[in-house]
Image (cartoon, rainbow, N blue to C red; front, side, top):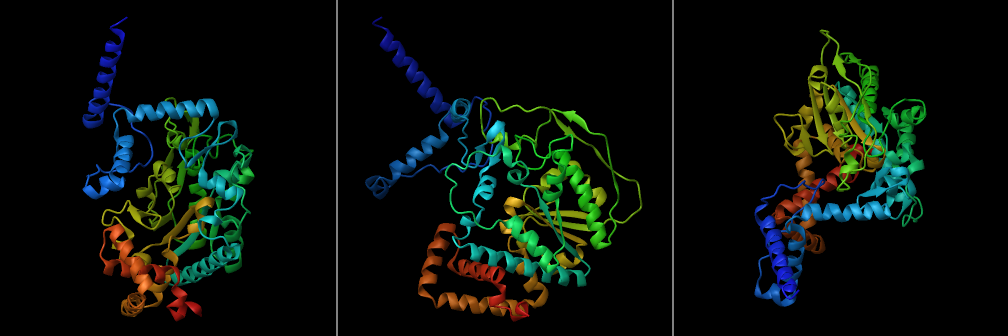
Amino acid sequence: MRNVPKILGIVTMVLLLLVAAQGEWHFINVRSLKGAYVMDPVPRPTLRTVMDGNWQTQAERYIKGSFGFREPAIRLYNQYVYSCYGKSMNKGVIVGRDGYIYERYFVEDYYESRMYKYTENPEELRHKFELEASRLAKLQELLRERGTTLFVAILPGKDMLYPEHLPAPDTLNRTPGPRAYAEYTRLFRQYGVQYVDILDWFRTIRDSVTYDLMTQNGTHWSNIAATYAFDSIMRYMQHIGGAPIRPVLLGQPYYDYTHEPDNDLAELLNLVVTPGQPPCQYVNVRVADTTQGKPGLIVLGDSFFWNITYNYPLDSLFRYTHYWFYNNTIYFDPEHDNTSQLDMRKTLDDADYIMLSYCSGQLYDLGNEFIGKSLVLLLYSDEEIQAVRDAICDEIRSNDNWLHNLEEKAANEGISLDQAIVNDANYLMATRPEAYFDKLNQ
C-alpha cells in the first residue's frame, strides 16, 4: 500500500507526458472535429504581456485549444451533455423536439426574425428590404436588355418547413421583427421581380411525399428534394428566359445509408456516437442525349446549392456553372477564385442565366452587395465610378473620427490605411449607391 502513491504519481506523469507528446507530434490518429475552428497562435512572452497578465491568458487559451487528445476529450464531454441533457455544445446548433436538429439562425428567424442582427428598428429593416427589391427589379430589366435572365430562387428553411420540431424559444423572447421571406415575396410581386418559391411548394407537398424534404439531422434540403427541385427550377428558367436547357431523366428512388450531406448538422455536434437516422432516399440523374445548346449559368448565394452540385452533371447541362458563394469565393471556374477578380460587365453579359439562390433564413443578405454593385457598373463608366470613389476617399480623409477608426481597422486586418479607405468607399458605393449615383434615383 505504501507504493500506491508512488505508482499513481508515475502513472500520472506518464499520462501527462503522453498528452504533451500527442499535442506536439500527433503520433496517434484521432477523429478530427467537424466544423471551422481557428487555432490560437503560440503566445510569445514579453515583459509587458507577462506583467499585465495578457501572456498568461493567451497561454491558457493556446493550451486549451491544442492539448493532446483534445478531440476525443471534447467529443466525450459533448456526448455527456447531449445524452444527459439533450443539449448541444456547439453554439450554432440547437437540439429541438423529437431529435430534430436546427441551426441557431433558423430558430432565431422563426421566433424573433433575424432583425436584431441588423437593427433594433423594424421600419429600418423594412426599408432595407424594399430598397433591395426595387434595385433588383431595375437590375433585372437592365440585364434583360443585354440578353441575361436574372431571377431569385427562394429555398426552404428548416424552421418554416418543420416548425413543430423546433425547440422552445428559451431566451428568444424579443419582439418579433419583419421576416425576410414574408417581406420579399410581397415586394417581389409588387416590383415584378422574377422568383421561384421552393419553400412554398415544399410546404404544400411535405405531408404527401414519401421522402424527407429536410432530414432531422441535416440543415439543408435533402439530397433527393434538391434533385427534384432543381429539375423544376430549370423548367422555370426556360419559361422566363427562353434559352433552352437539355432535359434530364430522373431514375427511380432508392434507399441508402450514405447520409452526407443529409447528416451534415449532426456531424457538427461532434459526439462520440453521431445520432442515427433511417436510410435516406436518393435518385440518379441522367441528361438526355440531345444536340440542344447549353446556356451559361451563374449561381450566387448560400450553401444550399452544394446539394445540387452533388447530384447533377452540370457540365452536361450548362456551358459553365459558376458558383459565387455569398458573392465572394468562386467555385467551378478554372480562371477565377474570387468575384473581385472578375471583369464584371463582361461576366454579366456572357451569362444566359443568373440565379440568386438563398434559403429563407439567409434572404436578409440577398445578393451580398451584388445588386448595388452591378447596377452601378451597368449604368456608369469606370472613369465615372473612380471619380465617385476618389470623392468618398477625400471625404474620409477629411473626417478625423472616421480616419482614426480606419487606422485601427487597418492595423487589426493587417492592411494599409489607404487600402482600408478604399475598402470603405467601395462598401458605401455597393450598399448606398443611390447616395452617390443619380441615375439610380430615377
